[in-house]
Length: 444
Image 1 (cartoon, rainbow, N blue to C red):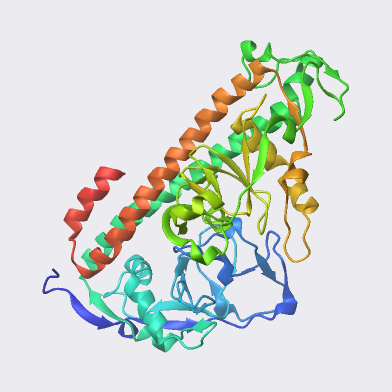
Image 2 (cartoon, rainbow, N blue to C red; image 1 turned 90 degrees about the vertical axis):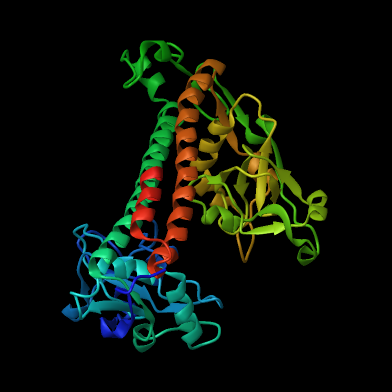
């Protein structure tokens, strides 16, 4: 229950929503350092925040009004949505303080606080992420296929306003959880980069072998591990490879099968068996699939391809060439390839190899409307097989890194669930700050 100090207010009494400027498409170009970035809808995370590091950035090369230059900490709201449910209407992002110039584009609203003594900017950000705010914008939106909201509709939103001190406390609690989630994601990016660099050094560039060939000690490697590597190369079907290693093809070291979709698919949808589609990979926070958006009925399992935790799969359509590790027991859509019965390599080794050749696979993919891979095309790709001892040494390090990544993702899912559950309850007063602080302290 809320206290008497909470009051129902209209957002427009505290904030004005400013439209962005219609930057002209002919003056857009690929971003390069020093140029101003025009913020686009695609730069938003659909759970809140921006993803400038992983989306296309567009720079603007013509003159523009200076009033549309954004400051670090400015909030932008999505004002248009191409899905019928309006899921991203009102989603906020905060401009980072990274030294770059960002520009306020059209179809985005910029909240300008007119009553700073009554509303906290960080609290406002979390208010914009509340289900009630999104629902209000969806119900008042115009359009059918593409939904639009407007400044006056955003300003019309009514909500319970706590005292400013409690607003700050609520924002701090939710921000603490968000910071931990972001830290986990950054840590995983670093861990993935370390694992990729190790694989590339050992098995693509053959750095330890080249070092020994030159009479040098391999960098960053103990003597025991260095002794496992040969000090010379030999000819193979793939060119020069370390002596004693083997040249092979993926089909020779793994059974490659394609997923399958029970037909007609609509007759089997909606059961309890996880149904892994390409969208589950693109929405996953890393290389592990822990959950699926859709399920199928148990009757459809025999008409599909079953997978289990630990299985390695590769997308072969739409966004093709993406390797993932399955973490659920379910079935895979025909947009996936499955690798089993590996000989001479580990799943971790094959995962990295598939990641390395991903771009090449995309170019080799066939299909006129959308690119597709197939078991033969992937199976014929070459792969170098190291000695058993070297593979064991690599797996020891790589498996430890990937287990840490997996655990970080699990914790991130847990923290996200807690944050999303606390958000509406804190904003409504159902859960008090003191109680929420106890929960946060226990999980961070």
